[in-house]
Structures are given as structure tokens and as C-alpha cells.
Image 1: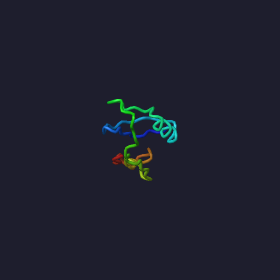
Image 2: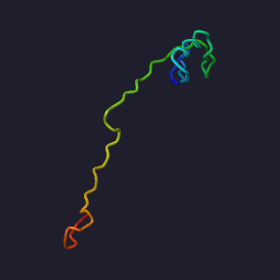
Image 3: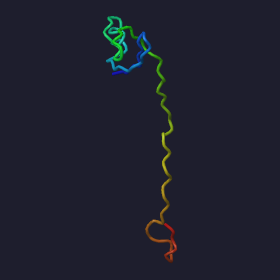
Image 4: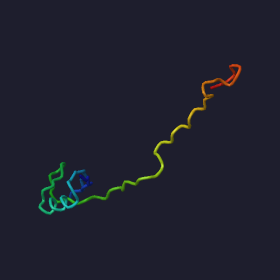
Length: 80
């Protein structure tokens, strides 16, 4: 499945899902896609912002909390 941003000849933009890019082309050529706002069947793909993958996580993770290993640091003075 693929989603396209579409625009009718009257300027309305909307999203539609299709099985493939070829399926969109076939349905658009046959005028089987209609604008949900005005019913116009003259639609084309609108410009879409690309989805860009990054190698970094979107939210930084917190560093692990230090521990004394459970044996204590001597004299009960361990802050962890």
C-alpha cells in the first residue's frame, strides 16, 4: 500500500491509499478518483515532503545510572 497527496483541479488537497503507484495511474486515467470536498475527478499527485530516515535515534536515551554493585562502598557512604 502507498499513500499519495492528491490535488483536484479546483485546488483541494487530500490523501488517498493505493495498492501501488501503477494502480493510482490506472484509476486516475479512468477518472475513478474523486475529490472528497467537491467531487472533481480531475486529480493529480500533489507535492509531498519526503520521509527521510536517519541513523540517530529520534530521542536521546539517558545514560545508565551508576551503581556500587550492591556490596556498598564502605561505611554506608555510597550515594548510589
